Length: 165
Image 1 (cartoon, rainbow, N blue to C red):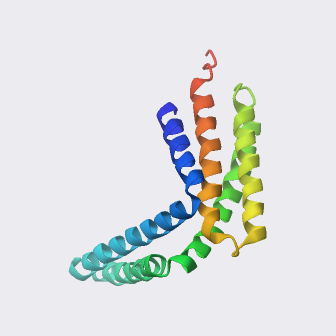
Image 2: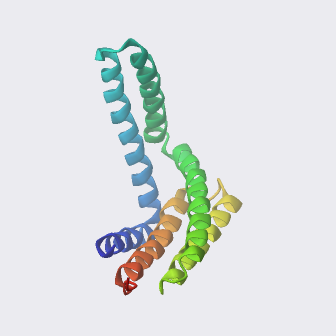
């Protein structure tokens, strides 16, 4: 928890200090990973041993190659799509953290988890309200804010005293 929290805080600081750069880099990185994954999957489908799996694997690989190409070569449009996905992730994370925190109120750090969920929920609403106009900087800035809150939450949960059995 402590190492993950510290790393999350460092990523958050980088994302907040250079949000447009972080948005571009993250979009192209995801695109490159999808491309590589798709190409590898396609070769596995071509040289696989089971025919039924080869067809599904090839279709999956083609989808990953198309998605990766779109993100990598059309970075601005890719950022808009990723911004919408990020809003959905924040929404789900916010709701999940809020409900989880309410179930673990015996832990002294439950309020940090609740606050993390609340911030994620508010960020989701903010992104949806300005999408796609602010896509270029939103990924970096809001991801950085959420990463900072997540990092602090992990640190607080890691430093909280364990309940005695």
